[in-house]
Length: 171
Image (cartoon, rainbow, N blue to C red; front, side):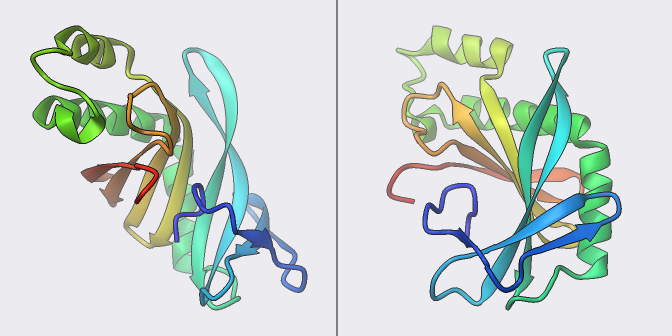
């Protein structure tokens, strides 16, 4: 389940909200037919010198709250989110340079676009989702890439970006 792209997610009436020190208020959301709950919260980060707010998700089996270990991991990542954003953006630029076609670009024809992407790093509206301690992804819901209507995702193992994916409408 990718909570940032799934329009069928709805708040759970019976699970409601929980408060976790270091994360704040979490609201349970679920998708029909999926035995997993995502807990949604907001977080702050700095982007281009401005304070911004976005949404983070923590996955849990069934309707249970997330585990203490996963919560502790998420808190640690979110405390250092600005560094993770830089790391993810740099990783995406490198992935796009290696395989521009996967992101709707043609290397010879779009050389200026590639240079602009490297310079501006047009990846905005970050939404981290935590699956297990050490396993998480960072979705940039907004990008100017030509074939990325749902954004792009960088998968992490602990603090290290390990993969990137362009979210086409058919993913």
